[in-house]
Image (cartoon, rainbow, N blue to C red; front, side, top):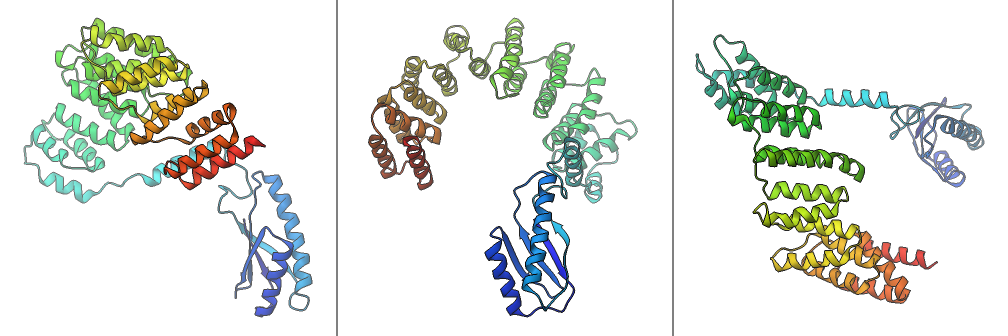
Length: 442
């Protein structure tokens, strides 16, 4: 908090100001007083940790009374009255209030979005219109819009062309407009263009509908994306039917909705049904589709189903697993404490020329350490260093705690020193680990 005090006398001399500063510093350690300005204001910085209105008002009232007494004692012959005339909080959202309510946060967010909204440049619109011939075709409009990066200019060109006599938009103009609006996160305007596409039965293509689904998933509108997918299925045009790209986009959207296991379990059922429908429609899954299924099963803690998909990749679906397939499975097995299976998969992965990711290595080291196998944990820790993988703080702490539990604190200290000598940890991480070690020892 910054509180301003005003006095009703001529500017004070420097000796008096310095005396007052020393008294404030001696009696109020939490106050930092700046110099008294020539306009008659004394600026006092109050660092308050109170977030509620009542607590701050009490603190503010007590501080005011105390400062008035201190001021009168310090400036006996220089002034008569001191009173707080204003205060300002650089951290609070509102004056003398607690945390902002939900409705206030919503209004603030709307105002911020409105303030950051781009403004249409009329001159760029005119320049783009001048590039079009008198009787332009949809292809001419597409060529102009494809080189225009401003989404508002593209939208203005699209709407202006819609009013021209005997002009009809085609797939190209719809596609470039939706891409520009979706990339700029202008989802409301994009939704209006999508409705125009869906209202015309003979307009559409697989790439156009895939773009719609992609940006609706990016906008977290899964229901709208599923409706576009159903529209593709019911389309009479064969080039508008869903392909493996469409299914992969939907898989990625379903499996990135939430981060906790419960949400992943709910959407994994939808992904499982979508996978069955893809197989029934005669579309062969590729390695990306199968990796999405493995990832979904791992996130929903169905590791055995993930292993089933993994073993069917080569025998049934005629595609070979890649490094992501192994990484997902290693992490899932380590979460369930199945370190033996995870180690076998890791060895198989390295035999095929893949290098485990940092997440896989961290999962292996943590699983071995929590299982009491400190030697294997340290072995994979050194292997991570050789393969230039990043070790997180939790992994270091887990290994150090297990060394303390099985051996001694001195062995853990030696291990930390070895890490520091090999430049595996920086100074800050080393101090944190030492602090955690001393804290657990106490």
